[in-house]
Image 1 (cartoon, rainbow, N blue to C red):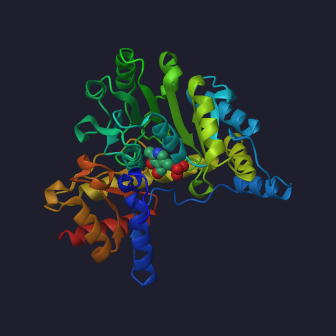
Image 2: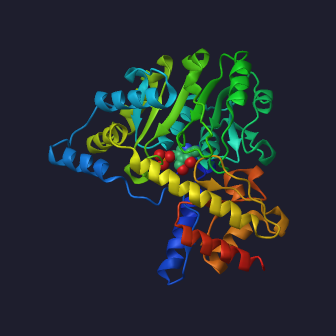
Image 3: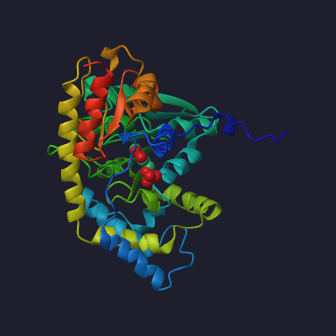
Length: 389
Ligand code: PLP
């Protein structure tokens, strides 16, 4: 019998990938499936970004780069951070990572061990909890409530911190609920964290520019008082429709930077050079494709909210960010995961059950509006018919 470490008996996964696999299987059997399950933009990476990668390959950029990422790519991220947050971030604090996810992997690995507590949003991105459990640390859910506009509450978050807390994970704009935490709440959180100087913070800001209705994301980088213990996760996947390129960046405080660099050397060496060149083109090139994508998401967002709210026993709060809606289906009498599964198998609509994002996700399903208006309309019509309207 092979004996692996206990962490591998606890590690979880992302059910969104299982739903995608099932939806693909059903589609290959000839079933008509509309996918509102997947968390990736249904747009192609803009052409000038693709061209930059092709040119890099043709120009012979085939070798290793520094583990931290090329200086040119880190400088591009620094320019980007200045534009989006107004903060000067040194390239010496920036890591280029193979995707956004790898930053949470590295951060949780750095602080998680038996006896440690790590706070994470629930409902939230499922990998937070999975990785915390992998390390043997205690996962402590921070409730994300509909009545708070799906923003986290600073008071509630602070009340969960104790002397065992090593890391606090926050995410805004948020997956899966689409909430954007207001500046006032973040101000309060940062003020309260003064009492806990040994708690590190991981701020997942991967949806930073994906907000609506004039809502603005407040980066944690705007608080110099926590900079020495703040890790910021960001990347190219969502903003420039580059999920498959595996391109992320993160900002690390001085005391942690060399540790994450060494982890990179041990695990992935570096991110491939052409992808980094594409990343520079994404940051420095025209942003009209991003604006067009966001305008399409906004139209679809309104459509989802309007159509879902027209279904009896369903209510759908208006998401303020990302590209997900998190309708409340508790009035239908269905358990969320059963409903998501039945919608896929019987109505041909892929969604994700709320409990796949944490126990507080019961009573909700996640709809990704990374699909065409026609498909969204058709999908919600099918959901309505399935629910018997
Ligand atoms: N963080 C959040 C909140 C996400 O929703 C996702 C992807 O869905 C990620 C991180 C990971 O992004 P990437 O695909 O770049 O690893």
